[in-house]
Image (cartoon, rainbow, N blue to C red; front, side, top):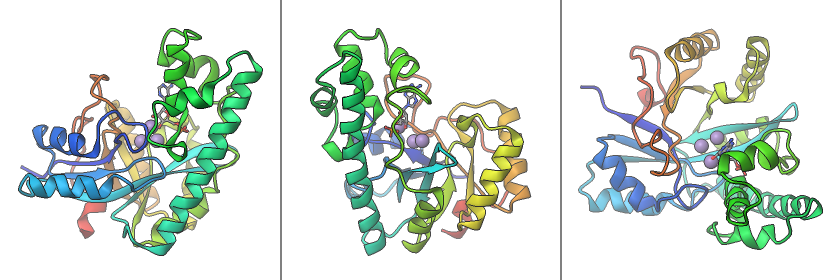
Amino acid sequence: MSPLFDLHTHSDCSDGALSPSELVRLAIENQVDVLSLTDHDTIAGVDEARAEAHAAGDVIRIIAGIEFSSVWRGRNIHVVGLNVVTDSPILQTAVQKQALARSLRAQAIADKLAKVGMPGALEGARQFASGDDAIGRPHFARFLVEQGHVSSIDQAFKRYLGSGKLGDVKQQWPELSEVVAWITASGGTAVLAHPDKYKLTRTKLYELLDDFKSAGGEALEVVSGHQQDTVTSKLIRAALDYSLLVSCGSDFHSPENQWQSPGKMASMPSGYPAVWDRW
Ligand code: AMP
Ligand code: MN
Ligand code: MN
Ligand code: MN
């Protein structure tokens, strides 16, 4: 049996529901062999994940990771950094910069919500996050549900927080090329996260890949969670066209979502040059 890799997961250091230790235990239960914790814009959970794996007898290998938020042509694009050196000064500075961006953005989102009759959102979102610099739209979504402004998280995104809506504030994020440079300068591999989520035409996706590759991007997440085989084939084709390594991950956030669990994602075809070949 080939090892099971899950190279995209979240803990409560960003917008996940489990602590890094709980995540590692669930991944072990699910027989994941190699796990990367890739919280949004932070590496705060990596040490705890490593310690838990060690306490469990090193039955699972932890890869230090991060999922950076960026913009490319006005769109919010996520880039996963795998196997980064966590004490790299460049990474430390990048994380501080993103933390500041995230807290300014949280204030901006709250101001926008207040203007349309939903006050107190910053304090509200704060209750669900590990700190102001970790607040994201999912924490605002929980506040909107709690207040009865919407009936579900899904509705919160559809009405207020999703792409193009009032709470979709992204001007604080750096350019795609900048986050790719942070990752490579801190010894990591830059992976374009969940390419199918951006709803790009093939032409636009290939333009994105041109820019990603020119910036030093090295891999494409050809499997993200449960996706159709036709999507996987299309993305493998793109990876081959651009000589990008392949990667895969569940993008796990919470056990409440029964469709998402560490190591449970669409099957990853073997035989293509992969990010883990160099580990
Ligand atoms: P942020 O980091 O604040 O930009 O928030 C982005 C996060 O929101 C993503 O990583 C997902 O976890 C979550 N998200 C995005 N769109 C949706 C949606 N339609 N429903 C639920 N969660 C979403
Ligand atoms: Mn998320
Ligand atoms: Mn993402
Ligand atoms: Mn993610």
